[in-house]
Image: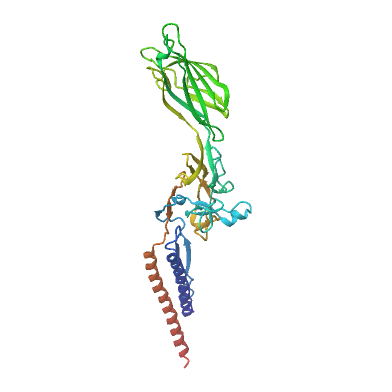
Length: 433
């Protein structure tokens, strides 16, 4: 009956607008929630085929969709582990309850922002209980190759805030000037000594003692020195002895002419260095290239250590942790060391809006979202990771209030339709009187 279909259409209109109002209220309630993705309610007409020239109202139905692919504005914060994704991609996270229960692999959830801080166990987690996931780096700071189509390689990012770290010295560059007058006939032949500190494999300070002894000829000038290297970690042991001859020509005067090895590793003319074995292992000592004005020189009458540079650091305490735009988690130590300890990938899916929405602005991949892939941040279709930042909600309060007015009017109109149908049915029953 046409009047009955009008009543049903009005009821469907009330239900559809109630659904839209629920979506609007959810959006407004989360207008200050970081990372919240607004819900959009759409209406779809229902058409029922007419028979015999009469028309039956089909009414309307509503569908809702969370617009996960929309991005909110980024706001700056003061916490280096406040993270937000700028562009496409999502951060992998897990529930802290899954991590602490250790029930196998933690289920990967996805989010676009989070305020992560270390808890009592060192996990980077939010107040709502989300733990950041990443690939652990090797001790040398490199990240191995992990599978990209599964979350099996991801681990909870755990920071040992009381961690100590040192870096052994493996290379020393010497920039020293030797007095040319000491290799002339009648010179005193005074040995010049240089002590260079280095750090062993345990971060302990040791020293290389380098002695330069001139060769004094009977006449003229020899331009020759004997370089002897000893290690305080190996008392009484000579780990390297070399004969140095310097050029005295007008074009290359004072530069190395030749280096001959008596003990220790051979001098490499291509790199200007030799390898000596200290107590902890091999160490490269760079004295400069033949004919080059840097490294060891023989000029003037003064012994001058011009520049001594080396790698390695003593043991230090971790002071802070930061995440760079490429997703690498760096630990900073008070000795100046920076170590890469994790890499945070960005997860991308063909249909982000098809994911299942969960609490705490997290989402779960589903068959509708398609297969996910773990990208390096700033690689492929993904954006980068911004630290010291949070993503704001995508709710536009002004737009939602406008939609609320429209919804209220539509709801009232549908209620009026029901009232009118009721009055018409009343008139129909009055015909019998």
